[in-house]
Length: 289
Image 1: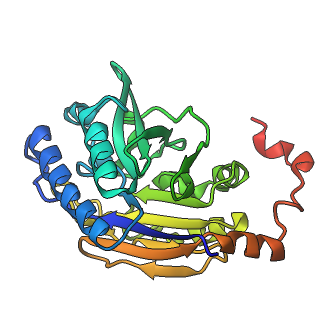
Image 2: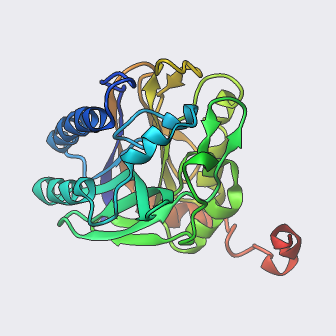
């Protein structure tokens, strides 16, 4: 019998000006996502992931201590607790990207993973932190992740998370596969231009190299006053053969849905024995400083 999972990727345009108070922005975006999660539930979604830093703008477009007010504790903060309630209400596994405060002055770009009964399972902290061409000043806001590459046993299967810039590094994607992941979620905030051609190249490559399903989420819209570029949406699911299954709109809110047969993973791995034929004894140079 097929192991079918219906997944949903939620992309949403910022619905409150960035000049508003942090409190007002957070409330507006959280309220919007509560509605979108409800819509996903009505469509039968069993696993949903939100976009990177979902309850605000992509604030690393500037360096401003104002945005430190976005931080919350995980899992004790109000947003994680709300999402636990929604997961339980809708019997839905949720992956929720947040701006995490571990202690005063120590912050991470994090995703909380919540099971379909509302149980908080754990979190993933983004490992690779960009600080580069204008508009991606993330080291001003985040420490690099330090919790490894966990895979979470959920009601729908084994779920792992990789966040945005992480996708440029195949090593972590492989670690998630070796840790048993069946479905990877990559919440992102990426703009048109330099790396757009990589959007549909790298992540299908991770999916086929590690033979798991992968959901790539990108926010849509242009956020003022920074205008660093168009966040071009087009969230998508791809299968263990690296083939794109479904794709979202470029410009607006969307819930991108795919029905995944997790038995396909065994089928593909029986053909392409990449894990069997690995040579970790020869890879030491890539982990040498």
